[in-house]
Amino acid sequence: MIDTLIKKIEEKKAPIVVGLDPMLGYVPEMLQKKAFEEYGETLEGAAEAIWQFNKGIVDATFDLIPAVKPQVAMYEQFGIPGMVTFKKTVDYCKEKGLVVIGDIKRGDIGSTSAAYAVGHLGKVTVGNSSFSGFDEDFVTVNPYLGTDGVKPFVDVCKEQDKGIFVLVKTSNPSSGEFQDQKVDGTPVYELVARKVVEWGEACMGTKYSNVGCVIGATYPEQGKILRKLMPNTYILVPGYGAQGGTAKDLVDYFNEDGLGAIVNSSRGIIAAYKKEEYAKFGEKNYADASRQAVEDMIADINGVL
Amino acid sequence: MIDTLIKKIEEKKAPIVVGLDPMLGYVPEMLQKKAFEEYGETLEGAAEAIWQFNKGIVDATFDLIPAVKPQVAMYEQFGIPGMVTFKKTVDYCKEKGLVVIGDIKRGDIGSTSAAYAVGHLGKVTVGNSSFSGFDEDFVTVNPYLGTDGVKPFVDVCKEQDKGIFVLVKTSNPSSGEFQDQKVDGTPVYELVARKVVEWGEACMGTKYSNVGCVIGATYPEQGKILRKLMPNTYILVPGYGAQGGTAKDLVDYFNEDGLGAIVNSSRGIIAAYKKEEYAKFGEKNYADASRQAVEDMIADINGVL
Image (cartoon, chains in turn orange, green):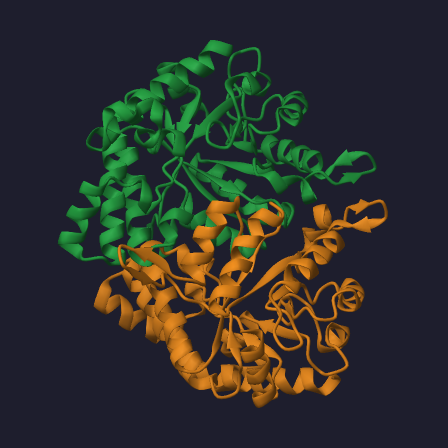
């Protein structure tokens, strides 16, 4: 799957991913009104509003981008109707030819991680048939439980040609609390990075592994060191834009082949119409604002590479 | 919520929790057959079989136990129908007066953790109304992202009188890979434990905090040390039974008041009928086998306290 992702990044000349992390507050009034008229001010109504919002953004941007990254928490908060919208979003993006990175940050003991892996990347067996529960192309994985929490995901990646991004150094302010702690001089995130390389060797694409990692744009010094430590590991980079990471910060996340990283922006793209910069589009044309924000992000990042 | 849990533990004289982590292979043939006849060999069929299986176990054991711990991965693997069964199970257990610990191991950056917290413990706002997505009483939380990944859960706990159990030292064989790494002589899990105490101070019940922790029964030496380090923190203890932890291993997880820990068993209870020990019940009476296994577990644990 990493080869598919790289092919799409090269075709679109866009090492970016759009984070479909909708808050209800991002959804334009007219879409909320229409959904609430049909379903009431209910979980179903909220889920419908978010689905229509997502569809608008995907329709306006899919030709420019290789991938999307729906954040499952934003759907899960609306219960079952929210999860239905998550699934519809995943399926629709795949129909549109996009690679879908499910930002699920799951991770558990072996048999439980296997269930997550099957539910999000593989197929579950029921009697003589098998079914995909959610069917993303990649998912994000939390490494706190160690190898036997990650390996079930790697096994499914091998069987089904899928991929994962393992959290190494996250973008949030307090990520250092445990991740930066030094063990004989080596930070915990680097110990995780070494394991990611080891896990990834069992699941290589042509040049890069199907086991990638997450390193926040907000920690460029660590990104630079980790890039060299793990040359064949693709880096999913959150934290650009709204969280404070700039294009300049991102240069060292890429290899000399111009590959090796894919940069996420969520709020900066999907809620672009709320920013002064794109206010001229107006709420009604929120999707066009997102398209412009995607074009600007691509230019911004390609400008420093 | 911790006070409610403790009250129920004392009433039932049972510091245990039944892990509702159904694999389809645990569900007796007759229940599978009936569900497949109605819904086909589909995700819906599997979800129905699991729901009937859970209901049987809950009906047979609810009067003996204070709490259940459904593992969401086991439902998530069956996609939307699986999540519907998860929700039905949570709601049914609450109707039966049980405390529900959602074993979700979520954790993300601030705004995303807030969405998980709202979806599983709180209420999400839609227009002028608010709704519970899943509505467990407690959830498990992964600490890898640090304070700003955990605090949104604590905030919801305070507002809604709910609780969390933060992963400190997990029960699986490779849990030590990162958790046991020493930082100036102190293992990472102990750094996490200290933060759990700090987070928990903001959210105390009468004696114990609503912010508990997870320490596997399979690491009794660490359990003993951590118990002393965090006297007001309730410990959720997985790993008893099928994973190898014995009652003798559990003594030091409890305080002198006989409280401070709640021990989980999943497979050992819900698939009891498959064990030689309980084979006499037969597949048809799987729920009676589970009841007997619960009684034996309570006696086993109370026997060493």
